[in-house]
Each structure stands twice: as C-alpha cells, then as structure tokens.
Image 1: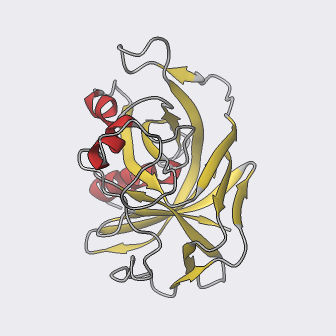
Image 2: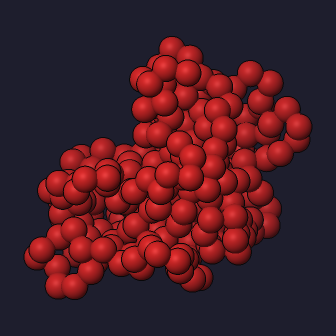
Length: 243
C-alpha cells in the first residue's frame, strides 16, 4: 500500500470519533441565525451537537489514535489552533441523532485526561473522549475511501420516534446507522436528515444496501465499551455505527 493511501487512511480515521461531550457551539449558531440560543433554528427544531476534535496517533498500528474534544470551544477557536507536533485535527461534524451522551470518559495509563490548546480558555479545555483501536479498509476508489474501525468509548446515541434514520446493511447482515455528517466550519449548513432524498446521490460499497426509514419506536445505539464504526471520506463524508 502506498504512503499516499496510508496517509488518506489515517486521515479517514478522524471521522470515527463523532460523538462529543459538547453541545452546540457559538460559531455554528452564528452562521445560521446569529442568536445566543442553544437550539439551532433553520434546518431543524432539534438541538444539534457538533464536534471539532484534536487527534494524536498512539503507534500500536497505523489507525490507533486518541480523540480529544472541547465542550465549550467554538469552531473559530478550533480553526485557529496550530496543532503541536504529533497532533492534528479531526473533521468538523454535526450529529444526525436527536441526542447523545458521553456516560464516562476513558482513563488510559500514560495518557493525559485533558490538554490545553487554546490560551484564551483557562485550564485544559480539551478532554479525551475516545480511542481508535484499529481499523480495516472496506473499499474505495475514485478518491473515496471507506474504513471500518473499532472505537473505545462509552456513549449512547438516541433517535426519536417519528424521525428518519439512514442505514447501511453489510453483505453479512450487519446494519450501520448514520450518526454524523461533515459540515463546513466556516459556513455551517445543517443537512436535512429527515429528507428521504438526503442521500440520493450516495453509492454504497459493493454488496452493501442503503435504505432510510421513519422510526416507529425509539432507536438507541448503546456503546458501553467498543463501537464498530464506518467512516466514509470522499464525495460523501459521513460516519455510521453498527446497531
């Protein structure tokens, strides 16, 4: 595998850490309605959660990495960060869920629980939220890459009754639910996840099937230890979790 492909694969694994401890941030809200409300108005009445992570490789394999998130940081503050040696930024994403929680934060031997990247915020503003353990290449071509990753985190993601979910089914019958989608941090536009044609241009991997449906009962993605996640990087940049 070429060094260029390995580099793309490493960058792709940034997508697997979408759930954060933070809610909406001011930069995203200002891009939509310039208000101080915590509810995004414009595309949805739901409170939307965003992530803007800092990442550090740990060396066990080409995909192993730590993910840190800042609960109170804005996109503008995150964009201004110059990553120190060994660090880089994950993607800016919006959650497709109705709500989500970090029930606990990982405590790893030899790993700092918090980090300071923004001088204007007192103390260490970034908290470790997850560790990418390993991953494998599912497919790719024409600039697109798809990785299935194992992510250590303690989270619960909620999709409400009556809401539309988007699902991918693998050739072996495993079902993955869309839970995060990339946004432009300088011009945040919230996708309409309730539009049945939202992913009409999306092409699933060979042998996989895509469908969307409206929930007749609440859907929970409950991950007390390790999540299996699909990360897409290319024309469609999205993150999915196996239910």
